Image (cartoon, rainbow, N blue to C red; front, side, top):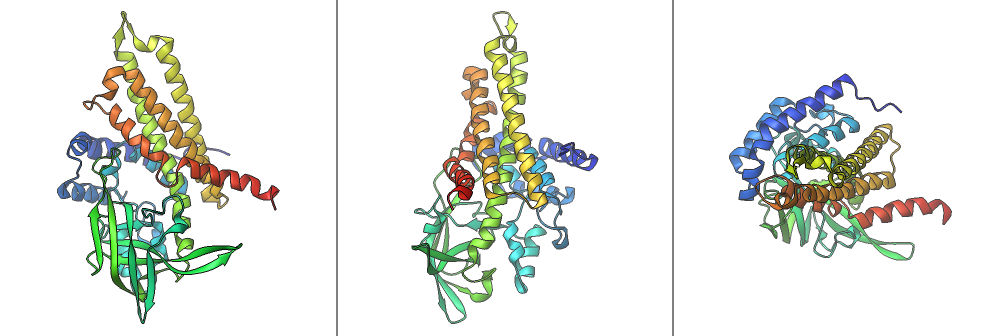
Length: 386
């Protein structure tokens, strides 16, 4: 396999890197301190991303998206992640499951999201259903030509900016291998729909300015025309998004880790102790060597997995490996960066403590490290336990 980037990919990486440095990084400290992105700044980033051709790069060309392969998408995610999610989220990547839109949904939801006119959010997680997504309790009951939704969601990222939510609710149950399972349906629920309330959730130390929300549904009536995909087939649209999303999270982790290493290298060359640059001491230089090696391994694993997605041969376990390894490498690298910076690594006057804080969530969202290990080990054992 040849992982030499094409000239087009190298140009793409350089263009995104320049965009991040010019349009996003200058606002990172301001946003982190305010724990908010102003509407004006959000609109500015969105407009410049559209003008630069980066907006909706994950969506197919036939609907107006970037039409990029997964490897190129991973390269973009790697560069964007060198700044906080609070900012780079406005270089939007609409939920790929919107490709399940049909009929009037295409003009009402899919195309406006690709064109930057609407923003979606993905509403699956509930207070009692995080890693065990099948345990969701939000229900949607058929009532004539409508569904009536009752329940709640939490940890719903970016819902405060969203024009609509892709809401997953139980619509039936069935038996599978002696166990009761939920049949789930995805719904397109517009902000402001009677019976739906959106409320800011608890503050998170990671990615300040990138907020999670709670969604409450109290006899929220949604027309059957708002079903995304097919009734009782919500997992089919959700799983395609979640599996690919884990690879992109891995790419995000690689980018964050590389930024931490770059900062550590510069500090190690500039900081003097006992008359020498601290990088000249093995206690620091060996850390840098280990950080660089771990990042390279995580990057190659991530790019290889993205390449396998392009070939149509990636498995859930392989996506899990990329997400697991890259997120844990980021945690180690961020921690070592703090150690290299010493006391200054924990001061909020520099980006290192911010990277350290932001890194922690990567081992939790999009499936915890424990869930990834479960997916990987189950895939390894499946052929032997039949």
